[in-house]
Length: 284
Image (tube, rainbow, N blue to C red; front, top):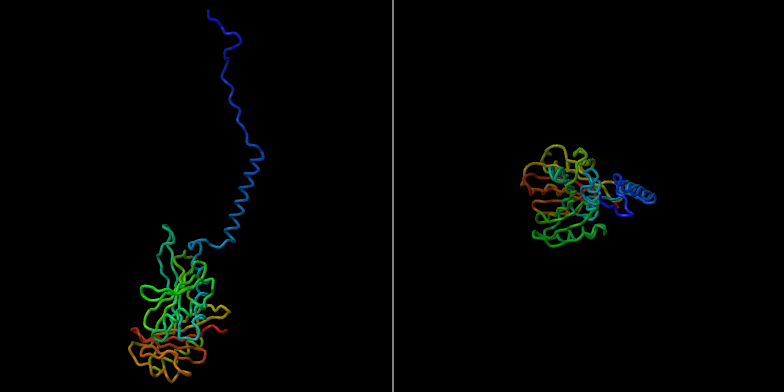
């Protein structure tokens, strides 16, 4: 018969489960309050904070920024010979690895005496808002203007030929949320009439109706261009001299630009087709 140690009783059943500690009420209250605060901040950020990456702005949202940027470029160009260029839309670019998008580019073609390209770029850079941080730097193919129009719209200027400078505003790849045709603003009126007048002076019928283009001016209103082709090049542009009100703005064998009141008309015979443009800038 075995002895039992004094003062110790053998277990009579399974051990009691350990009691679980509950969270203090103050900790639960803090957690709930923090979750509500994060939700409120997220809601406010989505509706009020500016986008932090380009992919957060759609093509339709970027289009007005481009429109205003081109108008700013027109003002910075001043009284030279220029014409708005048609909008181009590059489809099929990648917004994210899983989503396609499109990029919109609009701009201005400027004509200057041969050798005056860099001076034009520097004048334009100096006429843009300081917040754009515009500057002209040397590049492999000539001087380049670069600026930031805000909301991830890039502005560039480059020499595309003797006496010819192209200024552009580019959205980069964006989500497409609208019909692309709605991004191509129109014009008309006296610019279309000036193109028709120039074609009749040259004895060349227009190839269709003049294409209307426009851009928003900083002070209101719109800069406008009407553009059309008038037969194959080369050809003499001398017949246009009778239409010029005063001295020609540009007078080269293949480019002639002149003013008719507030309208600047450019005849460009450097390509396969003679291109006629008539433009009115921003007042003030």
